[in-house]
Image (cartoon, rainbow, N blue to C red; front, side, top):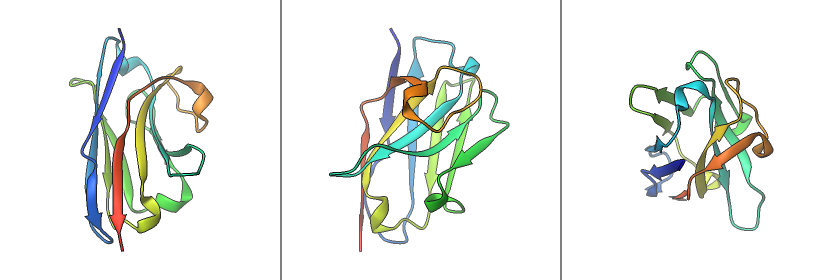
Length: 124
């Protein structure tokens, strides 16, 4: 059974940092791209960042470029999202997900496994 478990969320002041982790099990995740999405109250789930199967390529939504960094450790079946210079508008539930392909997509329909999410709250 495929399982993704996110951790590392919490409450932080604007300008602060958090590092989200996603532990994957039940599949050879090194064969698949991984992504982070987020959903704020009253808003649709949006793409945040993605990384291809070997970590050789990454992409980000414009609003987090230069502040967030996605990485992966295939030996540990882990994916990370380092978030710096956090802003109140980054407040959301953050989800990690497994893409259907080795190469990432930016749309949620291309991801077939999801974690339960971790809350990130940034106070002003």
